Length: 222
Image 1 (cartoon, rainbow, N blue to C red):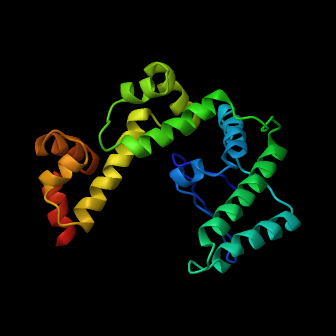
Image 2 (cartoon, one colour):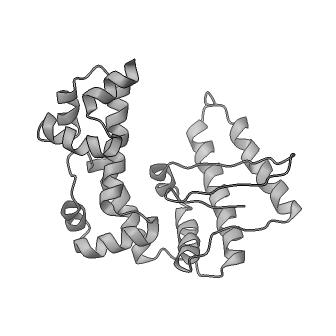
């Protein structure tokens, strides 16, 4: 079993003919809001600080148990009365199981949330609520009552990405959605994303995609 953060890339090669793979992917915002996030964060950090890939070999019984849990996701119907609650409880249960598996490979105390993990979690919450109007690190650092340098260090240590990379990712994801799925003009999109004008938006957008927003939209529609 391999545990990957958003900045990790895993390549598989030389698989047997009967190779099968199952997995679950949590959106960062959803993951951060689960009550069981802290044990997994702490165990992952323990691995990453040692520059060790968090890969664990499971027994047959452990693998069967996890496969059973993963199949429960398919059994939860979105039309069920308590769909969101069922999904959240299952996800928390799965995360706690992940934390125990990781703990068996790297012993550390996961009973408490470290200060750095809490800072990162609060940063993620702030980012989700403010990225459309706040594009620079001083805002987030001041809201968290820490220095910009300290916040930068914590965010890079835990996620492997800089604060600016987190902000850029959020903006580019929303920019692509607005360009691909709405009829808003590029100027309107620029203002919605918190840029002073269309030129500023274009200056931000082009390095990410290699073309200006207008050409990107025309290319996608052709």
